[in-house]
Image (cartoon, rainbow, N blue to C red; front, side):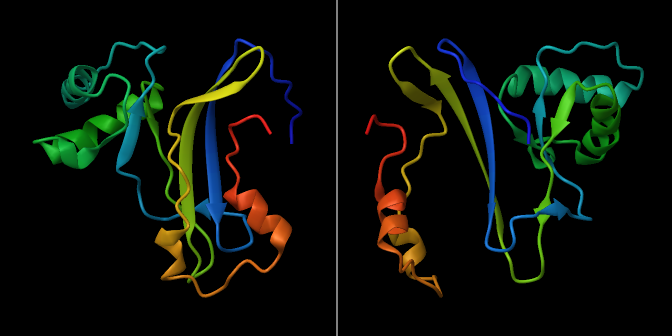
Length: 157
């Protein structure tokens, strides 16, 4: 892992992957259908379907993720997305898997580092343990780990 030093004034995008398995997810064979526009990149697309897709993405989803199902011409979207990815105009969200029976979840947050605190400005959903207790097959026994899960990670302790 690369060492990273956080400095006040930075805005950081966190991509967090968690799994019920060993924590070593691999790319799945299934193709992704969820993408996000890379607003800092430009390129003159050659294929008409690519230009149509990118134009619609720019209008409807300028900074938010989108699915290919959101497009009326889904066949054209599948054709056009390839050229957009090749020229880094669109980023694909990968489909990750582990062993059979294991689950992989992906969370995204935007965090701003301030001089005296850290604030989550997007993606800060509270962790609701009640949603998982009904389907959980195992429980946390260690009191120290229980305390870590229960505490608010973004408040000063």
